[in-house]
Structures are given as C-alpha cells and as structure tokens.
Image (tube, rainbow, N blue to C red; front, side, top):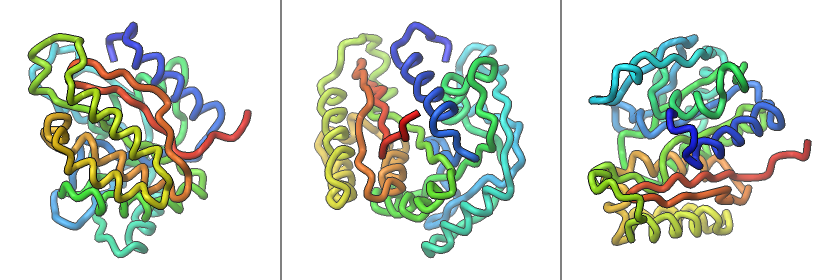
Length: 257
C-alpha cells in the first residue's frame, strides 16, 4: 500500500482500472483470507451499509491504523448473495461488520478514491471455518450465478504466504515459493473439468505447508475458481519474492472496449 514502486502496486492499479473502465459492475462481491465464519459449515455475509474498516493486524506504525477507504455496502446485494448460497444448500448468516485489511488495503490501491473510485456497493462474504478446498470450490459454484447479474467476484489472498520466513529479509526466492507458485499456476490454468481436483491436490503437496503454514490465504482462489464455471483461468502476472508470491489471476476474458 505504501510501497508504490513495488511491481505489484502498478499491476494492482491496472486491474482496478480494467474493472472500473471495462467491466463496469453494478456491485462487487469479495472474499478475503482474513474472514472465516465462526461456525462450521456456515458462511457469513456482511449486510451492513458500509463505512467501517477493521485493522486486523498488530505491531505496525500508527499511520496504518489511521487509513481510510470510503465505500458503501448494500443490504439488497447481500440478500442476493445469501439467496444464491442458500440455493446451494449452504447455511448462511447475515452479520454487520467493516471491511478487513485483506480487502481495503488492496482495494485502496486498485480503486484509489481520488483517481479510480469504485462507485458501486461492496459486499464481503466469509470463507468457511474449515480448510476444505472442495467446500470452498463449491461455495464459488454457488455464487457463480451472480456474475450473470453483473456482480463482480473478487478473491483476495496470496499465491504464497509464509510470514514466519519473512524474518530472513532476503528477496531471494525460497525454493518452496517458486515451486508452489508454479504448481498453483498449472492448477488454475488446467481445463475446467479437471480444475477442482487439481486445485484440491495443491494442499497435499510436500511444499504446501511451507508455502502456506495456514491455508487461509490460499482458499480464496478456490472460491474464485469455483465461481468461474467453464471459464478458463489465467495467471496475469507473478513475482515470487522471498517467502511470498504476488501472483494475480483472472478467470474468463474481459469484453473488448
């Protein structure tokens, strides 16, 4: 967010401009690595009308906790999300909360309020409490129908996310970062009829727990892949750096301007 010269910064801004200028959704549904439902087998959906932010991180300079990101929610769109989830026989519960930093920190770059505002409602839904990749893939399938209603589905996580090894403070790519980053690319870009199983197998790889000590930052891409239906996935860009990968993916193609 503050490292404006980092390559991921400009890539994220470009995606934001593509969404506001070419996709032009009527609303955004977002899933973040930083929100798991409280109850097993259930999804939570934010029905609040927006405004608040959650500073769910610790030990950072004061300015991080003073950040703002203006947005609006929508109870109407949230109800559409819940209806889609219930139709797939998934338990869902409405809650009111702010946006966690898995959303607002990246959206602040992609949708800069001064230069590229996202002037449509943002509704966030939780992940499951579990680390079951099939369960999250099926959640994506449940909300896939919302794409036909011009609701943009965005998932926020990381391709590789190991904070424990960040203490090495070297930008040299660790072996597991490179290997898992490539494996994720292969799974996402696989034929849609094979994609669910190949993506589930990622969690069983020998390097999986090195790349993701917890799978919360990986599971959002399973939701996105499930929501893609028959659309093919493509890695737009990646940067494997130390114990992190900043890969960005898209499912389907954006209509020509």
